[in-house]
Length: 88
Image 1 (spheres, rainbow, N blue to C red):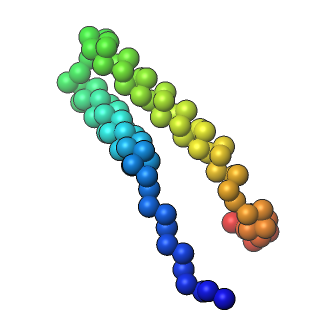
Image 2: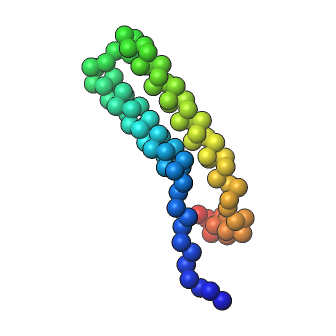
């Protein structure tokens, strides 16, 4: 039998672009929040930017929610049962 470890499949270009989009989106959300907390930006006066950040935040929330519900599909039920039995 072949006991060599399997190499991870390299991500496709679409996966890399999608991950890059979410990194940039989270960076924009955090930058916006930083300047609002600092008081340098008034959300009422920058309504277009506020709407864009709220849209990005909603899209990111939907993505996190969908990934959390899809995470159970790829798990081995035997491992989940063993982990629950041990209390982890």
